[in-house]
Length: 334
Ligand code: ISE
Image 1 (tube, helix red, strand yellow):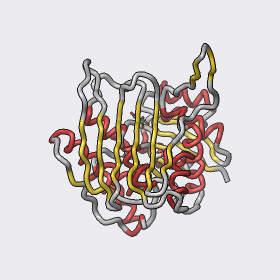
Image 2 (cartoon, protein in one colour; image 1 turned 90 degrees about the vertical axis):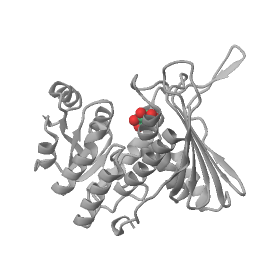
Image 3 (cartoon, helix red, strand yellow; image 1 turned 135 degrees about the vertical axis):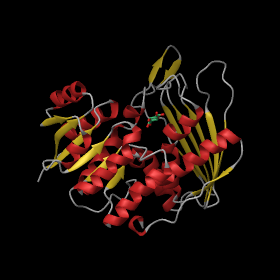
């Protein structure tokens, strides 16, 4: 049976998800493309052969010819629209963040608890990237010994918006790091400190964070939204017996004029091309009735990322190490 999927939001990420559903997800059909901007929805729908278009997300979510939903609309709509999917009894793949407010994430958690089941898979696609999968496997196999530290670098070519701030680096970019590190280490954070060097211009300076975990590890995260040279993500997991690092991902290397070079992607969609596809396949199986994907991020993981981001913003503004305090994990996420 074909699963009819509605895409909410036809911007950069929505258009990408629509293409994956239409062209690379056997067993799924691109049913509706929904955007407040009707022309934008129509352009994506026409290009990819969607059955219909819509402009009211709640109406689209409730349609009887929609079986599952992908939310890729602006961040502030993620939690309310996830709640609408839970009310409609439909599985939803929601782009990150679930919300920048941990309180709003708790409302989604409460709705899932009341329904007695999970509906929301969160788009922390890095969990499906082979480099993090291999790190997790090395840790589980005992190859690294006890984990001590994880160092992470997250560099964007340039900032998406001129008014981007250090706080936004923590709430918009860093959640990927917060999530994937706690996923790989299998632990929660206890504290966060945040620092910024000084830039010579008006662009947002990098944010460097140090986090402590319940497991006794130290985690460093650099977010540099204006790295200028490319999209570059690096990670190293250091154990007592060995260390494992992510390689630069490039299919080819150019040897020319006594130099060797490889290329950087311009943004995350190229670097995590395969991870997005794996993630969406896992979501389809979930939407078709299988258990919540083992690698997948849930509303609980969205809450965890929001709590640490809130503490990170406080730490950056105050210059003081800030505690990360979460509620106990509800049964539905056991
Ligand atoms: C963006 O929203 C993402 O999710 C990207 O992965 C991240 O690199 C970028 O900094 C964010 O703005």
